Amino acid sequence: MDQKESAVIETVNAAKPNFKKEELLNAMKYRYATKKFSEKTIPPEDFEVLLETARLAPTSFGLETWKILVIQDKTLREEMKEFGWGIKDKLDASHFVVFLARKKADITFGSDYIRHMLKDVHQVPDEVYEFYRNAYSNFSENDFKTLESERSAFDWAGKQAYIVMAHMMAVAALMGIDSCPLEGFIPKEMDRLLGEEHGLFETEHFGIAVMAAFGYRGEDVHRNKTLDHCGFIKVRRFFCRNERNIAVPLPFKFCQDSYSCIKKEQIFKSLLFLRGIIPGKGRRRCRGG
Image 1 (tube, rainbow, N blue to C red):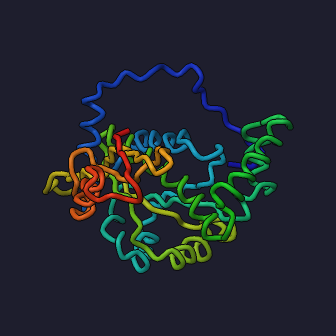
Image 2 (image 1 turned 180 degrees about the vertical axis):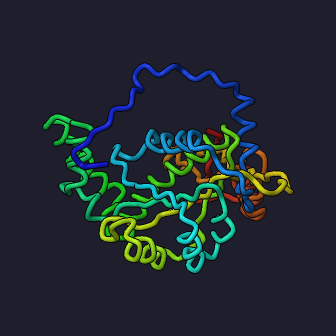
């Protein structure tokens, strides 16, 4: 998009979705990281929905620090295989997407890009622009320290690209389209190939964050999804009274359905301590919180 353009997508009066929960969960169960794609192609109008999904995806501060390349040229795809140890089979998919992320110079407040996004795209008034200056500067320099280095800046911008990719993959699943997120490539070499050699992006402003293939599965799903229960942590905080009778928290975390993420010895010692069998300094009384 030209830096003088500003597009408005009507979202204020969008109808409230009314999907059944079962349908949504079934789409997520249907989705899997497709290893082999068929020759079937995604209709242009369907892929346009995925691109529109990317445009509507949220990003931190609304700065949209990402860009998308859709690689459809078969010759270029073949060249990419040399530097893509984990993407070779996926380059046969109907659509192959490369997600770019902006570099530090562009995401530092005061840059031409940030000014363009706030003034030309979001069209914020001067007082809001100053609010962004203070809030974003504090966020990037103090809170998250995203501007500490080129690497930290690119990682933060790359996170926004991952959000966009995740939205595209979720909507694809709802449409019965398969996908696979991809990190199996050599960033430096792929940046050189696509950016410098083929001129698809300016390497001083962008780097490749992640890739994804979209299409239709060319194989049967051979196993069910597995879930580590420790991904869901239910924290119950315990407090102990110290010698001054002040309640202090103990940093014990318990899984909702499994204790496998905590060493047995740690659990055993914790229980002994809570029962008063292993006393600390003085007598401590513990209670659950």
